[in-house]
Image (cartoon, rainbow, N blue to C red; front, side, top):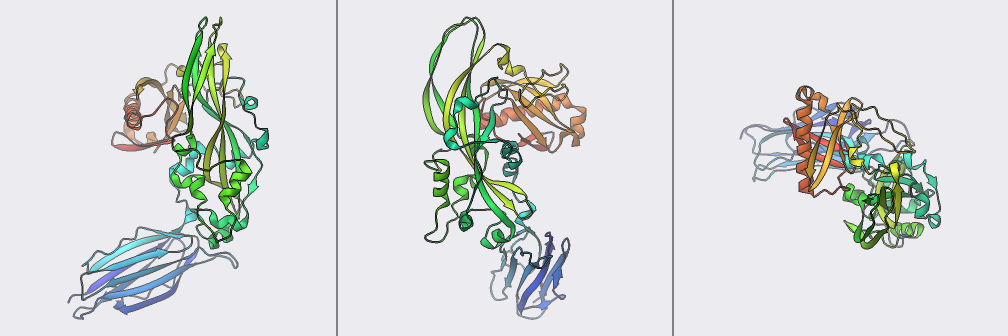
Length: 475
């Protein structure tokens, strides 16, 4: 038989050294000595062959683990490789399995019947940022602890919707207003938390300082009714209270899916603890679309001025955070729960009756105040246009994000930034008007397919294709 060969290259993408713990070659010979240490940022080859003329295949194994940089510092975990290329049957087997916080990328299993094969695997950790963009943005980082921490604290029993409804009609469709005090998660409940970065008790104890929860209160525009001067309005409508957060994040980023990791018999349930602490009757009380549909009466007599009647929802957003031993705080789970709604009337120029004319455009001088939420009209030279998406007419406009660009759609004030930066494409720089028109068509295609409504657009829109480039639009 001819020579059989197998080679696997291990690339170390961690900040620790990788150390060879054990190795074994029942069948075959080393092409060179196995590396004992693979330094951070370097790679090592493990090559074995079966000589020509010998009726044997290849079988070998090895295990490596990381070496902490300082004494007493926890290690990430280990990984084990195995290969079996039998001479006597057409059935090859190979595997690369990681434990703890170590993960691998790029490894390919050897196909049956192959006699010469090479592959490579990059070893990294869950700390290296394996979360996708949905988790990273979480609706534009609205619930990042740096922002949530600044909210006024309140006792859940004292929250009244009338006290938090804005006196001026905000152009934004939702706003966080209050939060509860921090509620730490007891250490004996940590193993009930599914944490993607710290998946086991060893990594949690080594790298996590504490987990904690807070309830964030948010107001959301559910519906706006515009009533012209000298006209009355009398109508009963069915109103749906939607679970916006759950529609925006992954299933494995929702609270009820984060805290079902289980635990030993007799342990106190973290789910039950959260129910009691935040007066939630059922962590799954919101279904995918809504918690309930109610009949709401809009009864208004005629007056001599224009009015906008806004139906505001008050929503509780339950957030679970992790603080690591370096002091960084990260949101790892979130859900929302409808509380109450109220109608608020806004009169005169303090409303957003012309909201479909309001843009934050790249060529406009923006006047924005966090307290008043006021925006100036766009410059007439800004790139803008109109488009119909799922039966609703929108005006769109180019939006500026420093050196990057995006688009804004009204009504609804849906403002997105593009990835990658359109300026990287020479076609964009020479054909901006055409480029934005083509991108608007991509939004129309996605919106029609996704049945978007005026108030319900996704946080991340992928596969927007303009001039052979695929873009992602993120709030």
